[in-house]
Length: 212
Image (tube, rainbow, N blue to C red; front, side):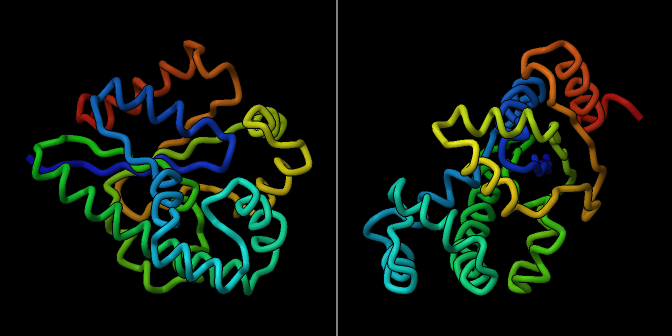
């Protein structure tokens, strides 16, 4: 049985983690959190951690280091491109490896959660990731009103100013039909409301072949 790989794309605070969790329960599926992977590939003791520290003089594994990256590195196109060029290929390699591992275990659905997969300029900035677009069989694009996103990000112990800055550094996420169908999910309401669950049941039925 061929495993389907689904991108759960959305900006920070869009609610993609919650959407992935609900959809994973409906299918069922295994969720791969690329934000977790991104933190893991720069953990202390890795070559990538040391290289970033030497180049940018920040510790990418520490909260204060990530805050400096947010404030000083991401707004600078040259430094941001350099940093992405180091982290993104490492993340992509881990995702491909996880896909192979789960396929061998007989998993039917793998959900990849990240803001990266909806970024229309990703491959333009990093041509080495061109093959990444062939990883996915379908995309689910999670959206939310800006005020809702800011509130959610602030709840993670960030100031409103930092939340706005973080959101501003991300390219707007919109459907790119690289492979298969694209589904829009609006999570502006309560993350537990019935409308969201009904929407995700429809997504499940399409992904699982229950509807034409």
